[in-house]
Image 1 (cartoon, one colour):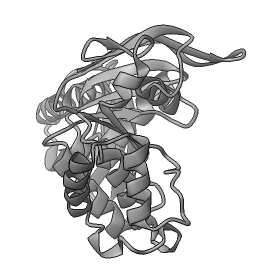
Image 2: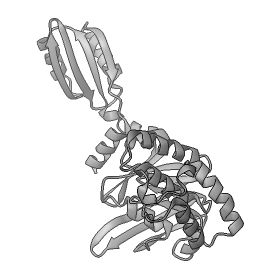
Image 3: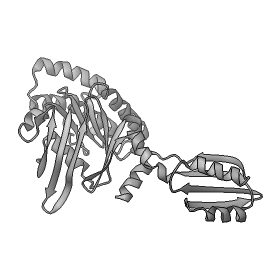
Length: 308
């Protein structure tokens, strides 16, 4: 559906995007992640045809964004991070204006108008000025304009920024429903949102892709640094001496009370649970608690960016 090939973008001497390549499959919701100034927004604007790359190209259904940007714009719905909409217009006036700008056929516009106001839940605010709407409803109006021409692809840049928890849930559910029919590129700082909505993610940092793959694949990358927490019965001094004798212990922390030792430990490689369990059996320590510290996408993201 979308193919990004060796894409680079400079603003003067500043390199915003540095020779990145990736694909987005039809019907996929792709998480596009990175810290501020990583190059996410620049990349998305190039895909939409809003910006020209310094080098490289983007193809949407084998159509070059450099050669036919207007044709590609017809296939894409874009919700920018700051959601630039005309706040002095009513919702209905604004959507009518967007239909005219896109030169939509009147019959087609009417059909799409009815569908998008239903899908985005803005029917009750059609005659209200956008400036009087809550942030959540403004985001819904932004999504409505992005969907109005029935694009095959949606590019959403921080669609839940500034929303309260209830509004975030509403927009998240809407994106999930839209993902059943559309290909979606979703950029967000709310990483649990990506875990809930996306099967695959790309992490970009300083203009380069530092990780790409399914969420589970990214989790696999961090397993070597996985820590476990434990509660065992034994003498702390003796236990610590035995731990120090091992060459495969990466880090540990301990605290003791009565006859118990509570702690956290990680090993250089392998399944930390199996290694620690075998260690306790060999040294006759009774295990009362033993569990892994699970890495969520937030921990993975921070780890990958720090490594880079």
